[in-house]
Length: 203
Image 1 (cartoon, rainbow, N blue to C red):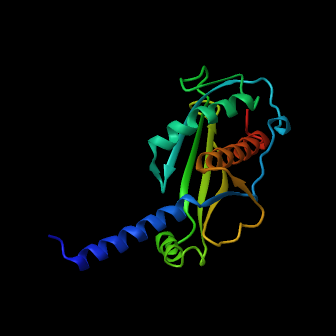
Image 2 (image 1 turned 180 degrees about the vertical axis):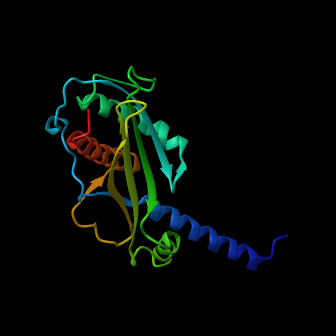
Image 3 (image 1 turned 90 degrees about the horizontal axis):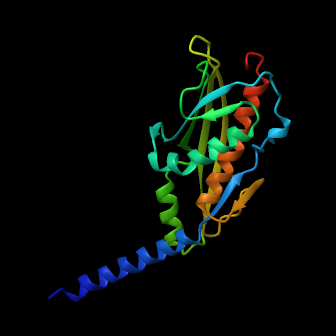
């Protein structure tokens, strides 16, 4: 038979866990507003257009994240196709050897994220907290096997608030995590594509 004191401790721990899970479910996500999407219509056009092989990779702290890559790959491919910068976009080698590699790396911007969330839980949401995730997008393009690569980089962020934390200024609220990541990806990729198009060596 389990002692009554042990049962009481287990009950308290269970209640605390349920409370923390409930607070997590009430988390709000915001896409930072500093980096705006650049419409494809504003990209500088270079003629003639060439086909390109596109390789996309999502990373978490520099380590490949296969699940996130699979979720975003088709979206990124369609965005590059719609950019009008290339005559064709494929995951297979392109005639002439043109290659575009896009890497999106998720890096933490806020330290002690777990402890902040735990404090929020213990105070029943009265002490709100905010956690920010940074994203670094690197685009590397070469027009052929012997061509020097053109490298462009952009930074973005997604903020998550729990409890009584105020909404971050100059940010767009997302319905959920998938919507936040999708919007962030579209915005950050549009910027590296625009920077590539503006480079004098891009062809």
